Length: 178
Ligand SMILES: [Mg+2]
Image (cartoon, rainbow, N blue to C red):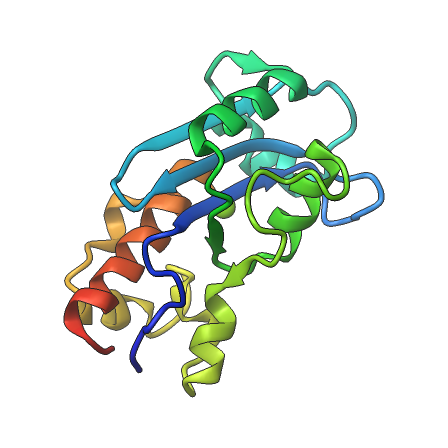
């Protein structure tokens, strides 16, 4: 597989953790954005509503930073991204994308609404799209082949998830294939 991105320099890598898989009620709890340069933005949001039991167990304990309001988070993201309207790359982008729209409002995203899903790229190249999940069988070999130490990322911590997708992306681009 080769990565020949359209607008290869206008990318950001994103990940979110959120309250629920129910799209009507779900909201972002934490988010990370990383530029190609490696510049990072990580935010945890104020929220005191209901969260899914799985989220309560696995995500809430990892959110230890000071919290910001949605309004403040939107301001910081706009500041971080500037006016370039980058393409946002995520690993399984559907909920990230949806919940960012809920944060900013329809038609008001500070990045292109057409997000780039890395799992679809894997699928289109005949690779099992679950392969990036560190817990999946075959994941270790996959990461090793790219020279990436998968143990350095804390899975479901938005900043580490975004770092991982950026590192995988850059490794494939550098290698010229995977
Ligand atoms: Mg994540």
